[in-house]
Image 1 (cartoon, rainbow, N blue to C red):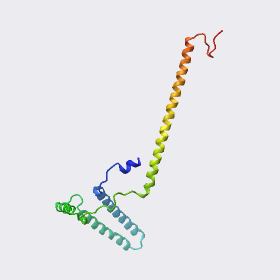
Image 2 (image 1 turned 45 degrees about the vertical axis):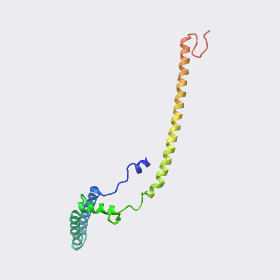
Image 3 (image 1 turned 90 degrees about the vertical axis):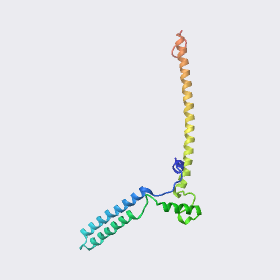
Image 4 (image 1 turned 135 degrees about the vertical axis):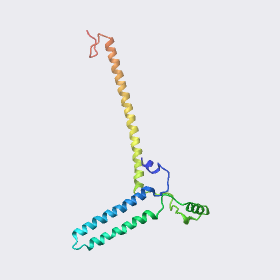
Length: 171
């Protein structure tokens, strides 16, 4: 399982996408709710209304920031000029136009020991399961042989009417 989690998919660049943009918009909305709540708390608890006006003025900045965020970044599409510029930069080897990875791979330090120990535990579990399966097979074989012996004894008893239940011949 641990191996599959790490290596199930190929490496892909992290471009953010609509989920990232949506989470940033939700963060901004959460900040607006927080500003409203703090403005209300300050208006109720403070001796004057000035702290509430000061906290409420942060709402103006937040609204402006939301409009700038919505209109400044073009994350859904890229212009043809930018594509051509990036392709020319790649062809010329100019790495300043785009960011290269600093390392080949990243392994989370907290999981290094866990993955190897998980692998070891899985190997032990597989070995234990195999041993249990062999024991179950031996047990089934013994049960079948005992059943076959009992069937043979019953056949002998039914074929010889002079034999009693304790196996002795009747006098």
